[in-house]
Image 1: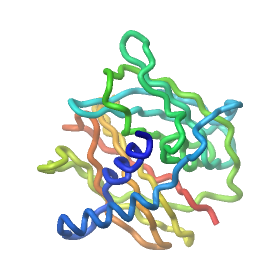
Image 2: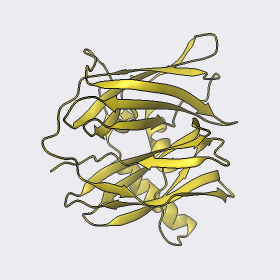
Image 3: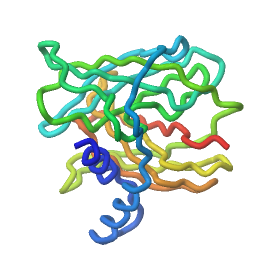
Image 4: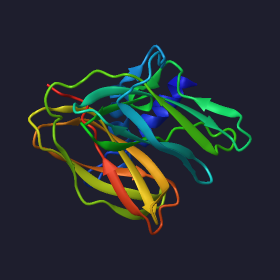
Length: 240
């Protein structure tokens, strides 16, 4: 089940450019699935971070899917990488529906790739199990190693919403690597806000992004993003 979960995640995270046939899209997503980095041992937080704190949490859902959204703030003066995030999803009665501590889960579903000094960033797990009706999520953040120097600079281009016959409402945009460091298994986290409230969220995975290059992405959002404002972030995954 866990193996099927991360494979489904990788296949669902679209990074499409240009016009492609169905076969070409399928081949690209299969290659992407093989490049996803897994956490083989399972998440275990022994000491919580005193520097990266949980600002807020929420659950968004639609008729078929649900996603956990966690906003974090780094109060320290240095960047950190591979920040562990343990979540517990509960229903309206407080019963636990899901915890992300199983082995064989994609690394970006148990940790934030990086966070800059004094930065606030939103992390998304859009692969919650479909059983039960999730109503809330709590999160714990573990200690993480520092990053020497500044984080590589990545820039998100203009994003927009559109209707896709197969996926429903999707967000499209582009990300550019403005550094000299190639990024591997780059994850983009996106949320849609309406009147300041997060109403939809999603993720995309870019297998590789060369220095000074850009790539288009497409994300099938969980929730109802109609009339909402999009915000995407791309925390660097490679640092030297």
